[in-house]
Length: 330
Figure 1 (cartoon, rainbow, N blue to C red):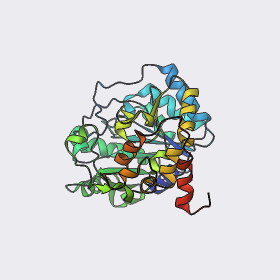
Figure 2: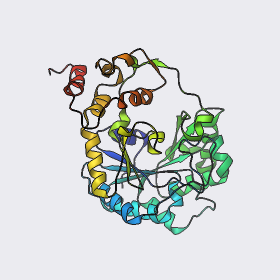
Figure 3: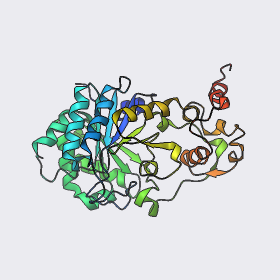
């Protein structure tokens, strides 16, 4: 069975239409101070399993999406939903990638159902840093890494790159696998996100003029939430309901989810953002005043533009800008 590395997953995520993220629960018992979705032990979780099953089945039927990530919240607090999703997606031939804190690994050998889920995965993203370790402790991380390794799964450790976090992750991986830990795992430093509770800890990046901002890979990989909300990207604030309404749609069935995903894929604004980038879009008269306005990231510019775009608006210029940016005759 082919296992996926971080580079392979990144390549799939940046291939239009090839992946989706299933946001399976808001709930998480860890309580990290930097949580970008403000997950809590009593946050919402799946209540409408008929809707959830129809969402999973639609992801299974999508012929173009070869990979589905499963995240939250903490996916492993949702035993019924996670078991169902992992089984059906894997049986449909999808590559399943799960994102977890490892909170489930209180003992060296977790319950059988967790092994069943891992049997159906192609990679495990395991988070650790000072914020996670305060809630899970090093033992659970080590147990989780060893359990994933026993299933021959690559372990990608995402760690906020501050205060020696990456070195601490390597130390824990050495405890889990010994000197050969690089055969089993890789450390991917990340930046803390100023979303959710993280907004009280991390500062937005340096503001840059809108005309200097490039493309957004996230708008080609939608997020589908357990309750039917579909967002065009993985911005946590959008998933939780913030930002322009253009960036999300609330659906009541798997068929509606499929329609929303396809509408996002075909929308000229998102295509222009993915193919040309934010900078070229500021050449559009509708966005020209944003060219010299400062934004901390592409999300800020996207939100400012999305507030000016009507969902069903016919705008030939939006379709033309990507062609011009590529040097293709219109």
